[in-house]
Image 1 (cartoon, rainbow, N blue to C red):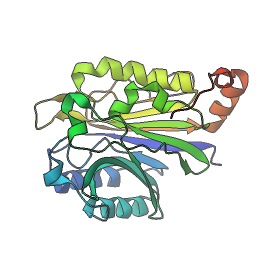
Image 2 (image 1 turned 45 degrees about the vertical axis):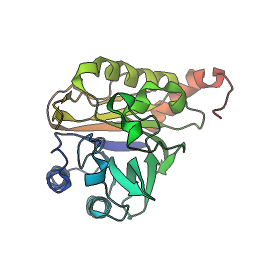
Image 3 (image 1 turned 120 degrees about the vertical axis):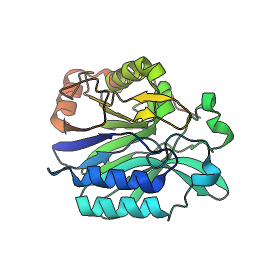
Length: 260
């Protein structure tokens, strides 16, 4: 078990439906990180922006973006996580990839598809509850609209970190701010949310507000919210989780039910 987990959040503009340009931009950002970190977090659909044009921009799992993640994780000697559009068995998935430094990876497919954008008409919803173990920490990855559904995030497995990658618009940013903090408090975990900024190809505006909250809902970042393209750093403490849960045994009082 590593006592601390050093995280970098890349809050960035995304070039619309342009994987080559986005990978190049993130290469520069990752290369600019001078200190040693354990995990780098990218936004939702970080190669394309939040587009429903899956037919044109989807990749296979062995495609360029997976190869890029493999290369960058090995070069940086840290894990990198973000979601991309994947075509598999004639279906499309908004798939999060958690790439380990050694080139292995875990995946999570977005469960709650965003009906306002008709995401459910293009993509197939994931059904697997995923927990990723990394350096002794248990991380539960989720994607954007999943944030609105607390049952899907419910901490029944004793995870330490709840991680959201997102393209959450400025119009509803108050919900993003409130729900990230709520998920940290109710699940007694660190909650990380990485959102993009800028305009997308449909004219929607995004203003960041990427955040990290501790077990008690306190912001770990020195500045919050931040509405510009930036590289954010945060350090998570396992002792904070252990000591707080020991003193405040709220998770032990939760209702006993299971999803079916």
